Amino acid sequence: MKITTQTQYLPEHCDPENNRFVFSYTISITNTGNKSVQLKSRYWHIEDGNAQIQEVKGEGVIGEQPHIAPGETFEYTSGTVLPTRFATMQGHYTMENEDGSTFDAPISPFVLAPPGALH
Image 1: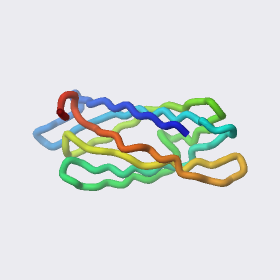
Image 2 (image 1 turned 30 degrees about the vertical axis):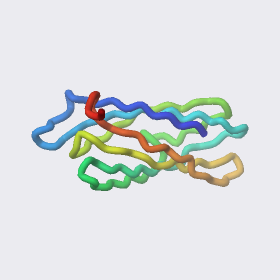
Image 3 (image 1 turned 45 degrees about the horizontal axis):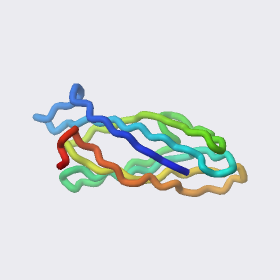
Image 4 (image 1 turned 120 degrees about the vertical axis):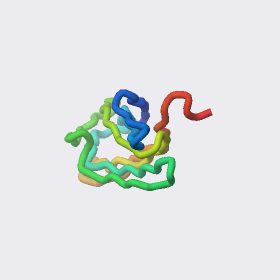
């Protein structure tokens, strides 16, 4: 599996005076193996700028449990609302092989921050 991320700060949905910061993230999942897999569940570990940790677990992504054939890429966009203007996210997807066995595909840490917020 190859998993890449892109993030976007959504200032039109933010309310900094009330500690509300909104981000979207686009995830691309490419099946680099030689067998089809299905994304069964997700796990996110989110740490905001106050060192508060939020864990998110659930079936599939955006209401789907996509099948990804060898060489294919599944892409989706989701979002999160945070109490700080900076956070990191990481986690994994639990994938199921054609034979019913499962494995975790790690999602490397990525940063959620407004443009120019990090030097």
